[in-house]
Image (cartoon, rainbow, N blue to C red; front, side, top):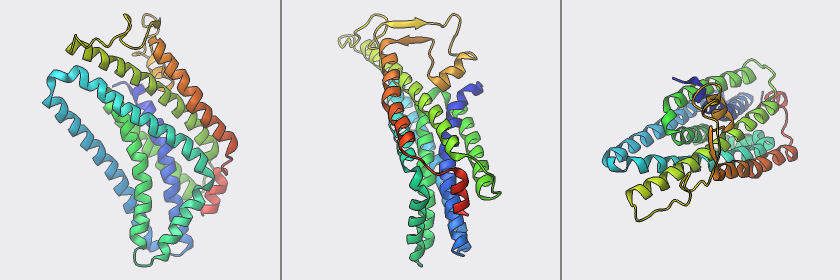
Length: 308
């Protein structure tokens, strides 16, 4: 097992897990201030339900994929790259949206959660269900994005699961340190650092999506020779190869595999892949960096102290 392959999922799960932990911590602190600690059990139930829901979504997708591949064995060469394109594209959109949206909303996160909780407590009969739903949705949203990323890297599932478990453990530890023991952590710096890593990881996912797309076009051309969709001799749709460093810096061995998982490095790269990689960094990365300058979220010490 190559532990380098678990790094991207660890980064994603840690970042999103901390976001969920902040919501949970704010809810617990507000319930404590309102002397409604008897509702804490619904918060914990929401966390458990969110995690369980994410696991069930993963199992459902895994079983569905297995059945589809079993039912159509002759199309294995086409199904795998198509699924990689599908899950990869959805993961890119959701993770990019989450990265930019969460940065823009970070400043008002505490007020938004407190407002939702205030409305929930105002409904004396349904407050327990409202609190459960608030926490469950927050945890499930982060878990669903992690599951999508796992399935966008179909061949790395076990390493990804290991990374996700480590990320969840780290997020739980940070949440506990902030809200239970009052440890001062600069969450603003944390989210900035994790955001840069996430941006580069998703850019690497863009490269993989185009590789799978090229493989899918190649498979279609092989299955249906009369539908030759390839426009290049070196690849099907990616254009000419720009470099081949597999002889001295392969992306399947350390340290190349680490650069592949964190930075999107490939020992074979083609023109369209490079253009997509650079375009993503300039487009989504530029908007993310601008959002960091526009928004000035409060420091973690202030957020944690206000929540308590």
